[in-house]
Length: 157
Image (cartoon, rainbow, N blue to C red; front, top):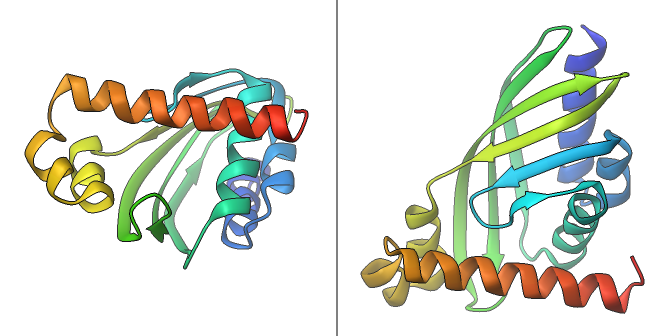
């Protein structure tokens, strides 16, 4: 197994254990992260996001597969199943992750998933009726970013 493939597996094994600290250690100090909810995060915010998500997860399980890695790039598929804390609704989120490596760490991480499909599960009727709209996407993103800012302030991150 290549070192970068092992790095991806270490990252998701830590995620499965809800170990946000170890997940952050897989990242390069200059990592950039993107997903449809949090959008663009620098290293400080990305590491804090994983700590926040893993510390607040409810009824969480994770599977990952199709791990591929070269000297520079990698990818995998992962599925997280959890209860969305704000609504108590069950979510099964299918994600395709893309990575770039530098100095033996993840320097770019992009998670791709369908935000409308996520919002239908997490938000119920409002997500079903409005989850496709840019205004609902903006609201979801604002809530996530506000939650991350509050978490970082409370934990002095």
